[in-house]
Length: 248
Image (cartoon, rainbow, N blue to C red; front, side, top):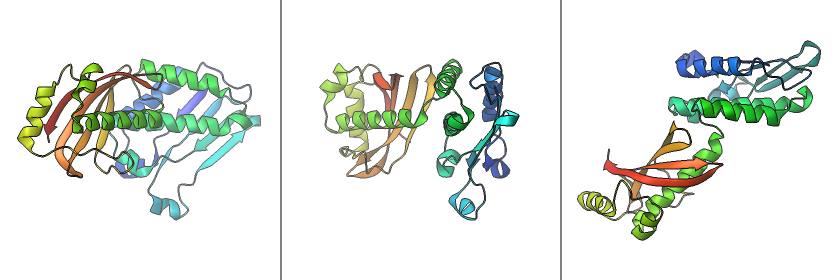
């Protein structure tokens, strides 16, 4: 199947082409070109839309889905959240494009009679072999919640739990207490649903992610950042550790 993925509409006009995203899309074309998922469609054009709400409200950059069975061709344009995309590091941008590709194929799988499960599995294998984020929404939620949990165990001073789970292998209880004592104040327990601080993450090795989150003192975001590392398999955290807590 020929999978032609263009640079995101609107975004490219303003910010230009992200070379790493472009290279990933070229690699996807090569990876999928000799595979078959439909007896009717062999060429699919995908143009992600990354545009602000005010532009979309003007009637521009509309989502569309088109399937031409007689020509063996389909085209899809679905949106990626503008704010999320422009504020993401390149690794996350690649993951967001992968997510958009999967949603695009899923949107036409019925009319185009595409074996979506086979396609999704091959895309998962492609991402794994190229160290690219897959299933980005679930991974982000999982990492966010686990990082908040670690922060809250520190706030509650439950170092026995953190030790038992292996989180203190690199950054010990005494290291944590020393940083907090130098900074001053006690950490607040964070409400996951109301957290307004900064959270970020990156994939740096197969199944291994680094996260960082702004900590809170007296229910306000402070200048301390918690850095963690997690091992994720089959949408589950199977291990983790605290790398550092530092002012930045």
